[in-house]
Image (tube, rainbow, N blue to C red; front, side, top):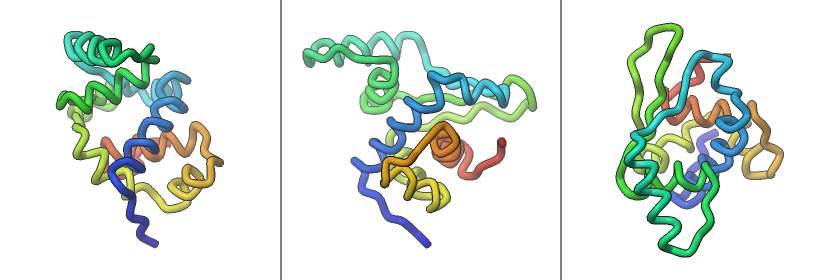
Length: 130
């Protein structure tokens, strides 16, 4: 089954995945780390504050993408090349995650496992860990 998501849905699913996996340290179990340029983080945070928002960490990560900067996954264990994604990648790749996990996200039955699969699908175009 192929699920088509709008760009807004893709961003929402990715944002929820960031909330469920990144802060929990779930990805660290694989020896991978989500990174970004410190200057991009500061610019994104400033951008949100100028809009009157009080952003959390995941809000800033999404704003990094919205201002045209990448998020990068760094593999500290297996030596895979770093992988960076931009907002367009989020729009195109979230919907490529296994449909079971997309449906869990849609039905608000998602958890760290769902988040993990979506994040891997975005960064690696596949589920390669876990």
